[in-house]
Structures are given as C-alpha cells and as structure tokens.
Length: 466
Length: 102
Image 1: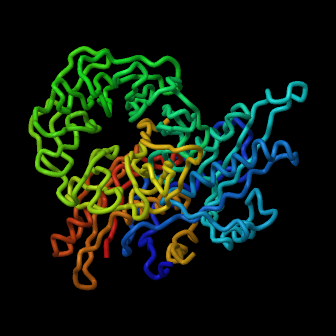
Image 2: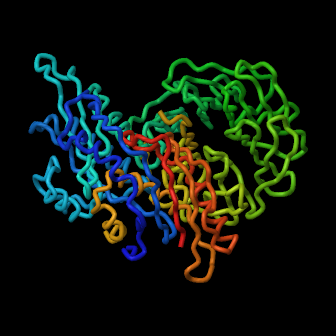
Image 3: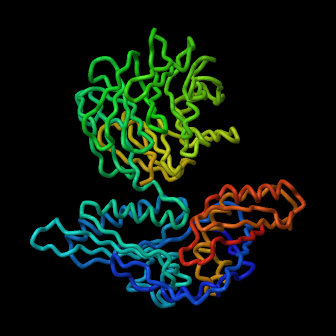
C-alpha cells in the first residue's frame, strides 16, 4: 500500500471550464442498446489549457475496479448459460491485467446500481473501487424457438469520484458468443486505460496427446483455455505449431505421410496442405511476418541447417552452413532477422542472423543450454528456454540492455510464446508426468495453468489482436 | 486504497477527464525510474498529446541540473508513447502536458 502523501498531485486545474459543457450529455443511466452518442450543445468552448502534473513515485499503480455480476432478468437458465460465463470471462480477463486490481465482491454495496447519487458512488468507493464496470444482459424474446435469441449486453464504466460515465457500449451476439462479447468488452476497457486492446480475443494453438494411441494433434483454444478444439486429424505425430502473423494459418511439422514434413492449415481447421520440400528433417517452422515465407530446420546431407522457403515450396534457400546443429528458427517481428539455436561454439545457445543468413552473432551466454527463442511483439525482448543445471526454465532477454531474467522456478518449463500485446507469455510446464500450458505476466507473476486434458505442449500465440 | 488519496483534491474540482489524467500518470509513472540524486532534485518536462494518443514535442522545460535525471524523465515519457487516445469529448487537437518529476 502506497502512502497517499506520495500520490499524484495536480498542480494546476486545467481545462475544467472548457469541458463542463459536455458533462450534461454523459448520461448516468444505462443507455438504450444501440443508442449512439447524443449531439452536444456547441457553445464555442474556450481553447483548452495545458495540464500540469507531479510524478513523485516510481512504478506502476493499479487502478481499483469493481465488476459486479451483470443485471439480468431473474431466470435460472439465463443465469447459468449467459450471466455466469459472461461474469467469469470478464473478471478473468480484467483481473489478469497489471493495470487493474479488482475490488472485493464481498464488500460491494446492495442496490447502488445504476450509480447516480454521491451516496451510491461513495458506497462503491468504500468497497475499494475507483471505477465501476456496470453491465446489463438481456436475451431478446424468442420463446417459440429457444436458443435462437440474441444476447444484448450493455456496459458502462463509471468514474466513482465524479460519477461520470466514461465508457458506454452495447454488444449483440448469439448466446453461444457470450464469452466472446465479454472478451470484446474487456478489450474495449483495456484500450480505454492503456491505449491498446488486451490479448482477450487472441488464440493459442498447441500440441495435445489427448486423443491417445500415441498420436499428437494440433489443437487451438482461447487465451483463457476455453473453447479447446482439435484442428488436425492426421492420427499421427504433429508438432511445433506456429501462427501466421495475420492469424489465418498455422504451420506445423507432421509425420502423417511418413517422413517429417511441414504443413499449413487454416487456423479454424480444414484441410492441411503440405509444403513441398526436397529437404529432410523439416522441423520447427516459423512464418515470416508477411506470411509469404517459412523458416525451418532442415537437412540435405544429414546436418541440420536453417532454411527458408516460400509457402508454396518455391525458392528453397539454405541460410546457415555450419558443421554444428542449427535449429529452431524464429522470424523477428520486423522480418529482418531470424533467431535460432546452434551448438557451433559448444553448448546450444541462441544466435541472431539477418533474414538472408548473413551477420550471425551469438546473443545468449549464460547457462549451458538456451533454446526455443520467441520474440516479443515489438521485437525488443526474447523469451527462451534456459538451462544451467537441472530442468529447463523460462528466461527473458531484454535485447536493448542485454539483461536476462529467469521468470520460472520449479518444474520443467519450455517453449515460451508471447501474447500479441506483449502483456503475457504462455509456455509448457511439466510437473511429474504431466505437461500443461501455463500463462503468466512477462515477469512470471500471475501464472495460471489453462489446460488439463492429456499432455499439452508447444504453445504458439496468435499475433493479431482482433 | 491509499494509492489515490492525494489525487482527491484534484477530483473534488469536478475535472471531467480525471480518468484520462489518471491513466497518463499511471502509464508514465510506470516507466519512471528515479536515478539516485539529492533530495529536492526536480525536472519539468513538457510535451503534447495528439488526439490519437501520440506523444510529440517532448522537451525539458526546467532542467534539474543533473543530466541523467533529465534524461530519465524524458525516457519515462517516450516509453509511455503512445498514450490512450484523448477523450472523445475533448475538443482540442492536442493536449499540452507539463510534468514535474521529483
């Protein structure tokens, strides 16, 4: 708990007068669904003045947010099918953000919604909240055909100290899309507070052995582990999925036609297409950011090297030429560099080279084995599997400062992948005989295991936010 | 929640974009790493926020006399770029901001 004395202070009260005229139009009641912003009275406002602030404390401050369950008609079926999953999804998404701290629901006031009066606002503030996310859910009437109605969710975000509504939105969708509506609202709130959406509509693809019979198939799920579905049906070994940057495709390695090959499948499933290759080995594919090329680990004369190839199999090009083992290429987000693992100077370490194969330089030096590099979305950090002694852990290297942080401790941890907004890392954690996918903040805090069925490994996070 | 106690005087004035200033402060504050300097060292950095949230025209308005301190303050602002878009109800093209780091 930080001392109020160190808190922010506004030295000057800036453009308050300029904007008072807009207050009247910010309604305090939940808006009618679909209703747009009302026109404002234009009274030739004075030019806006500057804002002056004092920042005297270091580090992030979390914004206290209250998220009570949505107001909905009293109907047990509606509660279980819509209101509960909506609430769980919303609190799970926003509760995972470093921006917010969720207020304690046991302290929420009764009957202070909508929050109109000062007294009602203070009742919420007493629960520890500074902002209130108030929501309403309705199912449009189609009694004749149950399950065909439309869900209407209306949300407003109230600044409890001013009682002003600062975000007001309504969403419509099928009952099956209620979790997607919650993710969309969470993204809108993230955008409001941080300037960019969260990872809440992104997907994670991974490898699962849950179908048994020694097979491994490619699966996909939402970022919170919901909606797990099988994409491939090879009944074979399929490994190492990688999302294209636009989220439309997944490249992976599979043995379904005998020798190892690289395949591409639409990210919502369908028929897989093999990339025709003359190389053998054909492991760990990585899409170029423009989606036109795939880097992979292949071999012509028995020694693993890094190759690139067009997605249609044309223009096969060998980038490395070393008697050592070069593997696990990962294309950088700006397309200009490729990270890979090589044991050319002893133990396996991570190297960078230009996308044409020139200018190879080593970038990891600590530990005996560093592997499976993954670039952060901005390209400034690299997550990787690091080992000194014992099991692999997850490390994050800041490429600007050269500093490395280990973010896991306990169990074996491998195969990190970044969320598209850079706010999370997913990886596979093995404890005992079970491997599962975990998600956490890039400093390792807030870890959650999001799979449970069978063994689940090799996560790849989609890179598009919507 | 003591974290926003000092901000209350400011909200008492019914400043309607309080939430925006709050975010501004949180996002820049998150990047503010204070170099070890004598007490009472402070620097004022000025910049403008475009409607899109883009930060422009960062300049040291009142130097602290310790260049590493001034650079750390500028860095905190650059690292927060872009900020969230300005509130839709705000009618200016850009918002001028002066921050004293102390």
